[in-house]
Length: 93
Image (cartoon, rainbow, N blue to C red):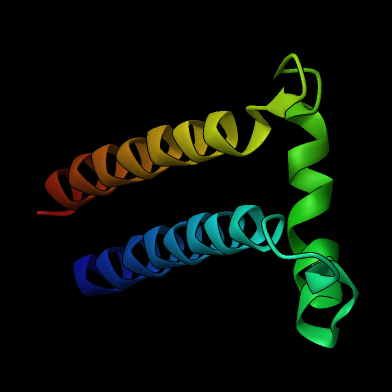
């Protein structure tokens, strides 16, 4: 039972990490004109943009800090998942 809980949380943590990297790549694509129109860019927009819409209001002038805030939120989620994993594994033992 404990090993299943361990792997379940590890997969969740890994998925959050992959999503963080998708946001980083999405932000980097904004530096290249026409990058969002590529097939890869369109896929990334479909995956990342719905989550980033929650943080769209965070602007200073023309600079948008939504991706940075989204990464911070997801990092906190990762820490929370790690904490929950530790708690569940202690309960199982």
